[in-house]
Image 1: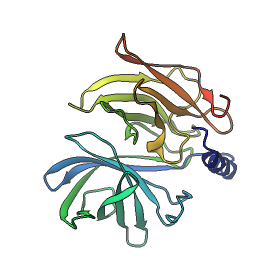
Image 2 (image 1 turned 90 degrees about the horizontal axis):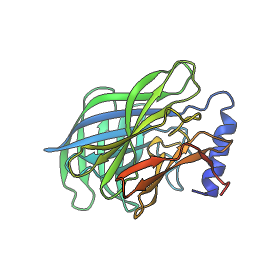
Image 3 (image 1 turned 90 degrees about the vertical axis):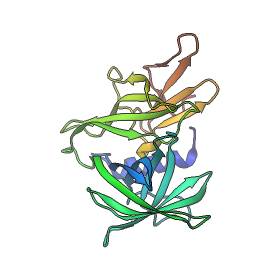
Image 4 (image 1 turned 180 degrees about the vertical axis):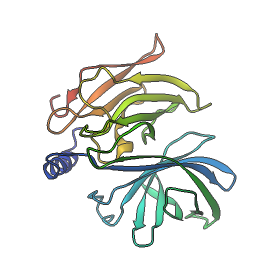
Length: 254
C-alpha cells in the first residue's frame, strides 16, 4: 500500500480539488454474453492519468460471469462524440477479450470478442443503476459496486450512498459474498467510522485490497489524513467471521 506513485497521484488530485474531491461516474448493468449471464460495471474516468501507453483510456471497470463470481478487470476507451466504447477484458495484465457497444443509460447491444481465437459472441446488457458523484448536489443510496480484488472463496460488493451537501460518496457497508453460490456470508457496517470509507482510490473498484490470502486479511481505503488511509479487516478462524478495526490507519505511518 505504500506506493510512491499512488501517493503522488493522490496528492495531485487533492491539490486540484480544493473544495470538492468527487470524481466517480459509474454505471451498473446485467445481461448476457451469448447465453452466459454476467454482471457488468464501468467507471468513466476522463480525468484519470492512466498507465503508461494508455493515456487515451477513459473507462475502467469490472465484470463477472454469474456462475463463477470471479471479478475480471476492464479497461478501455469511449469516443464521447459517438458514444462508441471498446473495453478490454484484462487477465494477468494481458488483454484477453474485447467488448464493443454504444454507451447509454439504457439497453446495450454489442459484441464480445475472444482476442486469441477471434470468436465473436453477442452482448446484451440492461442498465441497473448509476453512482455519479461529481458535485455536492449529487445524492444516492444503496448503490452496489463490485470490487476488483477478491479471495478464493469470496468476492466483495461495496454499498455506497451520498447525501446532498456532503463532499463525497461513502461506502456504508461491504457485502462479503460466497463465490460458490452467490449467497451473502457477512456484511461489514462502517456507520460507526467517523471518516468516509471506500472513496480514496480514483478507480472505485480498487478501494478494497487483499493484504494476505491465507489469513484473509483485507484493507479498505478510508478518507483520513491528507493522503488517505485504510481500515484493517481480519478474519477470525474460530468464529468464522471477519472483523473491522474501527480505527483507520493513515497511510505511511507504519
